Image 1 (cartoon, rainbow, N blue to C red):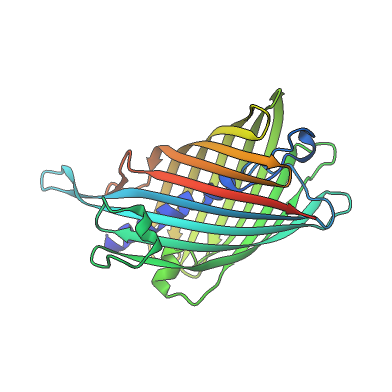
Image 2: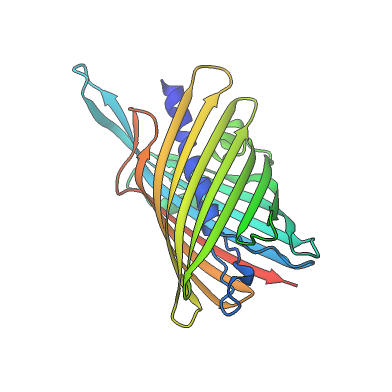
Length: 318
């Protein structure tokens, strides 16, 4: 039982982790609107011109209370303890335009992760950045993965549709425990498809679907997600607001043993982006789970304790 709870606890930040980058990393609408050229999180409909470079830097902080339940002799459940779980991910990605026809580009990325498990549920999420207060919990951090990205418009006649694919692998000299908690014990393959439409002056909608597969000698992880969000240009066009909703389904299993777990979460998100110039933008995103089923009667993410904020920067270079 203890090992099962440990595995589920590790899975939770991983589930939240992969939604953050797709919602918050800056990308482009390219040709869509020559007066706006909006760069919006995860909605990449822009392939770089040849020899152009795109750099993204995203910082995402997720923190929540995790309640541990126990069952009494008369089969009633009660909360035995609460922990504060905090996960902070820093992602640096660089894309390069290789195609003279502006149909595809390639890139590299690096993920540096932080993790904190604190027995004091009312502690500050900012403890994830230090090793202080060892009496109530522990913090880990380190370079977790390196990877490659590919981005393309499959059909020249349908530039509103783009596809991304990526592969990342664990790096660094971390201990086995650190690797599990920082998600540095698995290799990851993912595919992300995006489609958009303009629905009015300065208004657009986006639909995304993503599949993800993680594997190691110990465990397997499958994830599927879908999202829908609206983009509205504000005022003179330097500010953009984009609310959205996302569904995430995640299944994890151990190669040796009978452990299996399925997690389902529905997120709501609200993003605000400032883009004073075509070549750079700054975005802020807040996420909240409206429904979360983590697949165990012994653990629960405490309602109203969850907070997730991401800050992203995107810059273009010739």
